[in-house]
Image 1 (cartoon, helix red, strand yellow):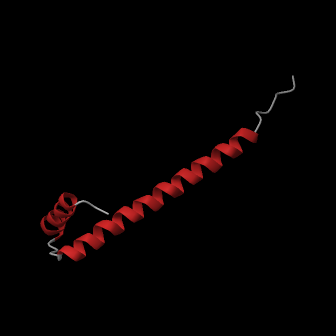
Image 2 (cartoon, one colour):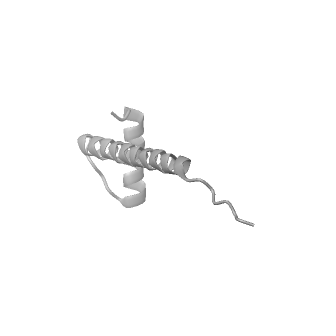
Length: 66
């Protein structure tokens, strides 16, 4: 849940930058949706990095035959 001060800041940004005036409930929905979106992105990024590191551990550098 997004704090009230952050929701007020979001409402001001939407109004000043985009000319959009929303009700308190609508601003709350937008704010919470943004938080959920970035939580999903963070989770996907973390999972991708974790999987990438697992594969890197199994790759051995090639040894040149001289």
